[in-house]
Length: 148
Image 1 (tube, rainbow, N blue to C red):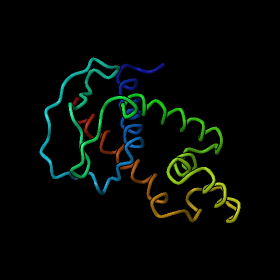
Image 2 (cartoon, rainbow, N blue to C red):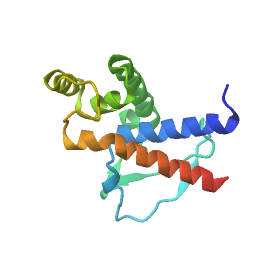
Image 3 (cartoon, rainbow, N blue to C red):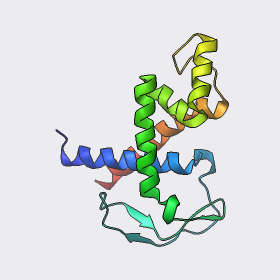
Image 4 (cartoon, rainbow, N blue to C red):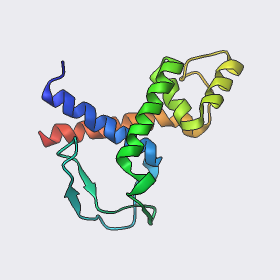
């Protein structure tokens, strides 16, 4: 059984992870030249999370409606990640497969005779992917800690 705080933290981390994965935002490219936009409350599962009225990446607007809906995309991403976790048995391999593809990870494991993410030679982006997610976890954890 989760405490209220642990339950809230779990969903904030899952939402942030899903949004990050869905929008494929590399941590190095987060800086945007546009000023911050005002935020509005939406009354979603995470009452403390505010969805912006508009979102942009590298100066290009990102639509927040129809098939680009962040909540629907996040749910889909999490379903796919759960499938990959079942298939590869480890979160590290599941996240690598999410990033560079199931076949690429399977091929690397077969060719290199290893099922250890940390020993596999994968595309550089995939090798950094897990560490970028860990950085997001640390940032979110510090923000939650500072807020309480």
